[in-house]
Each structure stands twice: as structure tokens, then as C-alpha cells.
Length: 374
Ligand SMILES: [Zn+2]
Ligand SMILES: [Zn+2]
Image (cartoon, rainbow, N blue to C red; front, side):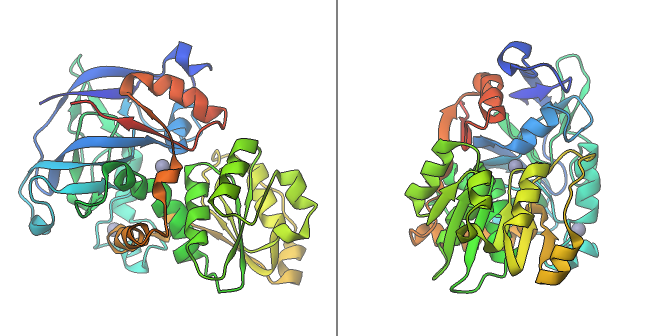
């Protein structure tokens, strides 16, 4: 079928992206769903820093690629499914997640600690979990999938192991955010964080993932939350949502009240990582979920770790098992304890994506949602 989507053909074009236009909204051919695959009509997709990282070359991916990995949509058709057919009737709303879980490999048996091995391989190659691409450009060239999703499009064909069904009362905008921002930031708190009542959680970097970590920590009983970012408006948002304190990295470094038993780094920069390690209290955990450039190197004091009994943990996708964790976040949202809607800073169309990249690059956005027109 013919679809419309936003394709990246060349990385590292100059800023501003509104002028260099790295993402081209174009017509593509999308194959019918094959075995283990679903055709999903995309309703809403979020623009995440990991999309920007493909555009600016921090996360080099094979090109051309149809970007977008945080989204929700509705099942329109399925290929032959060997399992899960009852989960995905036509009309079912689903959350796309950015790492398929095959459920059969050694890594999939680690309760979310290790990313699925075949899923990581096909993600790196720009293919779906069963291999290959279902997208063809206007010139007949194969177009690759972004993280098994390629959601900046009117429709997507995805593997059944890349999606999770959600109940109909979960709006598409909320559902979309569950797939990346909440799963990653919230999972870092609930799965990786090990927080106890009476402890303090400090979040460094208040993009969509970091603010989702703030929201999730605020949902825990008896936990105090601090927020750190360079942008005043994001600090104000964190305070409004319930953070006890919010400050710039320099201010936080000078104030012992920012030392966290759990410190989450969600900015993906060396400075944020070093800030997070320095803000971790004795006996505490630094959990890093950001994705810096592969060549980035940080400077920390090993003696400080030993002398203070601190731990540093890397957490991909918040150590989440999407089928286990997305229902947990839905329950928190339903109970009014996780106002996911607060993560939305703008609603745009596909044609606005390059301008939206500039806003994200300037640190001036939480989550910009692409509301798909059909
Ligand atoms: Zn993301
Ligand atoms: Zn696996």
C-alpha cells in the first residue's frame, strides 16, 4: 500500500534543520504484513532525542531510514501469527516499543536487564525482527526501519514482538508516550532504581525521558524528588509537577540537598553523566539511560565509588519488559498518579518535523507529538 512517511537519507546535515531539511516527507510503498507481523495505522508518534541522534550522527544508522520509534496506533491487518492472535484483533490499539523481544534468546531470559540479542541485531541493521525491510522508496530503493517501528508515517508494518496492546480507554497520545519516554524513564526508576520509602531521587536531564522519570518517582510513596537541567522552563515544570527542588547542574553541585540515593542521568551527555555520578549519595545508585556518542568518555573518581559504596548502572529501555511494564504504567496513569499528558509540549504534523528537530536540539521541548492525518 502507499503510505506517507519521513525519511532520512543523509546524516549530519548542518543546523538549522528547518533549512537543511534532513527529514523528507515522501510517498513510500509498504508491503503487506508477513508472518508474525501487523499492519498498524499510526495515530500519534513522539519525537525523541534518539531520533535526533540518528539525524546528527551520534547514533549512526544505515540509511535511507524511515525514523520514529515512539508511537501508538490501531491494528488494521495481521499476517499469519504463530502466537498472540488474540492480543491483536483488528481495531486493537497498540503501543510500539523500540526493542523487539524475541522471548527465546538468553538475553530475553534476564528479566529486561539485557536487550534481546536478535532484536538488537535487526535494530542495528534497520530490519524487522524476522529480517528484511517492508518499505520501498519512490525510486524503488529499499528503505530501512528505525528500531523495528518507523513510526513517522501514516502506517507501519511491525513484528508482533515489537508492540503491546493497551485498553481502549488509554488515549493514543498517552499510549504513544508509554512506548519510549515512560518505559525508559519510568523503568529506570521502578526496575533499575531500587528506591525505598524515605529516600531521595534526583533526575539529571529533563527531556521526555527525564521528566517521565520525575513523574514516576513522584508516584512512589514517601520519596523526595529533585530535578536538574540547564533550562529554566523545564525546572519550573518539574517544580509544578511536584519536585521538591529543581536547579541547574552548578547550583545542584553546591547544595547537598540534591544528593540522591538514586540519581538518574537522562540527557545522554558526558557532563550530565559526570553530574549524576557526583550527585549520588553514599551507598546510592547512579542509573544512566542517556545515549551519548559512542566515542564519548567520562571522568570519574574510582576511589569515590569505593569509599562511599556507590554503584553505577547502565539501563537500556529502563530494563523494561514491555508486556509486563506497560500495564503497570497504565494502572498508575488510571489511578491519576502518573499524569503522562504533562510530557506533551507541542502537537505537530509530519511536515513540521525538521523545525521540531531544531526545537529539540535547542533543549526547548519535552515531547513534541506528531498527530497523524489520515
Ligand atoms: Zn526514544
Ligand atoms: Zn530475545
